[in-house]
Image (cartoon, rainbow, N blue to C red):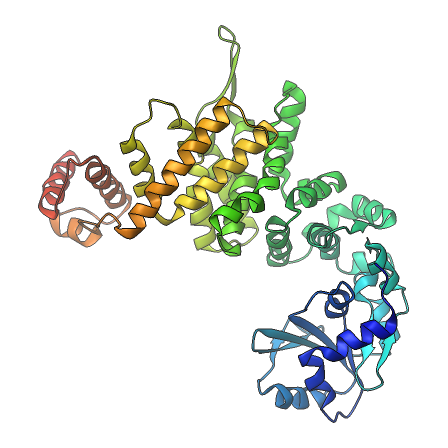
Length: 453
């Protein structure tokens, strides 16, 4: 989709943020650069704006224009400043040389286009606008990747997020050759890019691109064990393959559940990690000619925990993702025709607010395995998912009350530690089954547990 320079200029000047900047009187040059111009080329509305200034005094003028103070991003010698106002983010850097040299050092040609705010001029030394029109992700110079290896993963993130874009062949070959450098950047930066790939509309294609370039196994070597097992055992239903294919359904089925992006991200990581333990739990029953992966979810949790520690996941993210992995088989296990309403309610009470997340994880896992096709088994599971969601909606209207807490158990004589959590779970199970109906019943049952301790 070609765009004329005049059309692009008009789109830029219509942006409220740009209008406000054009009202300022600056000491030096002010350029709009990077992703905002790319998005306007694609006729999208940007919320993030990157500015390059030639004079440090103009930062104060920017703060005055937007009525907000800038805060520092990054560390010396490379620092940027961010101003946030009315859900719009403005990142400001300062030119060390000419704008041309600055643009040639940028990550991709599509981000190496500048607009001179006061001269009303487009600067495009790398033919970035042409690459945007053709949907090509290309670097201005090969060394830009070596200078910041994270850009290799960022290229795949753009491929995953920007509909219809492809990686330039030379860029792809460079990623294959230099992929081992990806672990040099800070782990938090790697995770940030992965977060955006995981929740993108084309997450499955993005992850497949990571696989084909070797990037996947540089960041997650644990996944390579799954892929190798698929090859060695000759699995038609690939353990690794169905995991990646499951991402085709993450956004698709979320149209029904409308979970927010943060929740979707946790589900995505749970999907990516849920079967890691299968590489360590493979067994084959020769009499029945059946493959088993007994207790693989436990091993998956252990491996995923190490990965998340390595990539600096927050404690809340880790806890949520591990709960999903630990329970990812539960809906499958209660999806037979003999399954009871009590089993459905028990799952809802156990998972609580994570119930919709577990349902969505189950659907992605299942349709990744079935190639998106329906059969008797998938219909049973889908029916059970609907029953669970209905039970969850009822639970949300009137959640099961917590009869006792940890302090109550300590008052009875329990010692602080994991034993209290286990006792509370036992009490909850009895409450779900109807054997415990009030606080007194719960405390009496707790005393019997204390006796066994």
